[in-house]
Image (tube, rainbow, N blue to C red; front, side, top):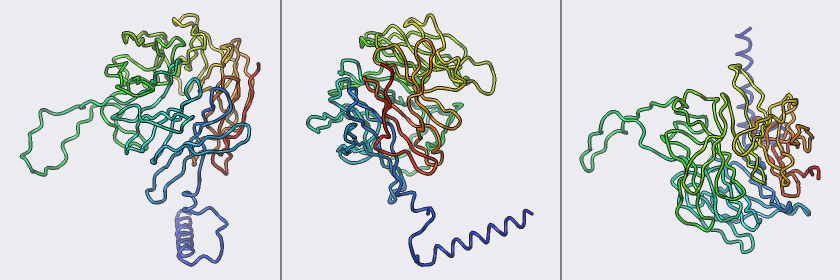
Length: 407
């Protein structure tokens, strides 16, 4: 049976190769390898605070470089009209609206490597606001719109075996010995990881020197959320000495901007991450689960007081894992996304645990897994922007639609 299968496969391969070599007699009616470079998909929809405009990333593959190219577009909610954002070349991604909706922060490779930019919508002018050695992530505007917070890999020298011998001037030696002493040292799509740790930074939204907020031999997971008074930032990570051997362990922390003091707000064995400070600053929502040493646990939505007390789960009655929490503008409910029988949804969760679906059929950015995932964002008036697609097509634009939360 195995021999028959192999022969049949070889015959099919020969037939397909011969067919490709022959001149085409008409348009192909099946998906061809070259068609991959004609696909475009919508990612990371970010609705303006007033709900009138959505910024999103349009991603495609460059046939000349065999790499992804990303561009930021704006779509008007009322008319559906689309406008590309002039980012000066390269790829542009991670658009984030300022609190007043008049500026757009984003990351661009126009200068060769990912850098942080701000666009002034009224004039169309943009400027690089920081000179960064590595790509920034988790962009978050301060409530007053004066500062941008982000996470970034902070490089170090890594491990070594003694002091290297200095080579003579003009000598051409082989690459130096690479010493790896970390548990996680490579990743899919990235290869070998650079030595260093992810930490938090801030920079003026008008440009200037960056300020490092967190330090140490451990990583901050991001999910940055400013306190409404702008005096602190909440984030998640694992600051235990044995963090490298605890892949499912994380906690919620708060760092004060005035003095850099870091305070641990959760203390549970398991995952506690993606924190979001409430609009009034009195509560923190976050995702997680208690680690019971089982193969799987549903990720729950939790709410606690600002000081870490009075923790309670809001989705204990929902037999699904939830993600991407966002507070409603009035602080009386939250938005989450979850998968239900292969269908990705956006839901609103009240503080008493009532779950109400708002949108369905979200689609992710992975072309090989288009049936779930996706992203969404929420405006101050409760309008929800999300990506939507199908098993036979990538996530599409214009952004797909809106759903209104309860008043």
